[in-house]
Amino acid sequence: MTRLLAADALAHPAAAPPAGPGPEGIRPGAASGTTAPGRWSRLAAPAAVAVTVTLWASSFVIIRWAAPVFSPGPLALIRLVAGVAMLTLMVLVLRRRMPRLPRLRVLAMIVVYGALWFAAYTVILNHAGHHLDAGTTAMVVNVSPILVAVSAGLLFREGWPRSLFAGMAVALAGIALITLAAGDGQISLVGVVLALVAAVTYSIAMLLQRAVLPGMDPLTVVWLGCAAGTLAVLPWAGQAWTELQAAPAAAIWGAVSMGVGATALGFSLWAFAQTRMPTGRLAACSLAVPAVAVAMSALTLGEVPTPLAIVGGALCLVGVGVAQLGRR
Image (cartoon, rainbow, N blue to C red; front, side):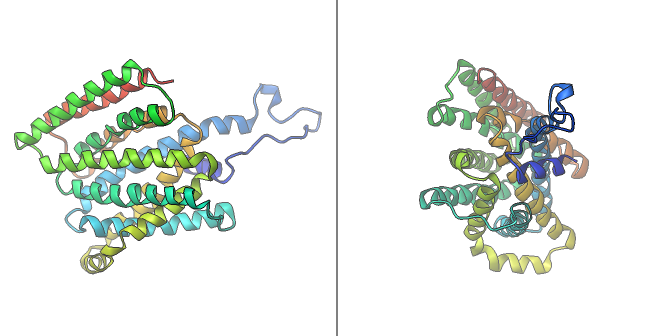
């Protein structure tokens, strides 16, 4: 139901109540003091966020599960090919025509955003999945809202409240604990570094996307970005073909499902939510991703982060939460 609701919102982002009166001169829903479209409009952004959080959490688990089968580059290519195919279908069905390309400057920003978020972030995240369990990876990557908040304060003039710096301190303490666990040999230090690089890449890409969204259709932005990311990972096409021939069907479908779900639907719904919610508040919503990823990983893979990593990850999430307290 939430996917259908969000898809309808994507198809009609500016839907409004009927202009004309009803049979008795009363607009539909006027008796209750609010129109039905108004209720749907209020629910659309939270529903989009909830679906996206679930899809993105599942991708951490699938990446970890597919690590023995696919190398990072080929896995990214399979995912993105499936994603751009699904996005093309969504554009044709929901828009009923191919959208016009934006101005050259905006298109260049979309290409950079796509290359960073869809290509670089995905490949780096896949590398991290070879070294860390899904839950720890998700916890480290999700320090990105703090990076987004700091940058948004400068670029979008959203301010730097004291709570932001307090949250940064708490989150850094959490990262220190996770790094300590890596130093003790409990988890991979390489994996922690890769997850942190993925977080930085994610943050830069999210800010670029936020910059181009006000004058663009969200679905078109994601579609063009995914196409740019797919082109960026094409050098792995030969290796991907070789690994596909030896891969079990379940692993292939897992990679494809990430493209259709986490990439096409997830990124589209997230872009839609960005047009309805403040940047800082939306970034804070991603705090739910690690918790869902840890639960999924424990149930499906039997993997649970080490105690020290759990404490460190919890501090990271608390820090991100504290950083959002002072944001409007």
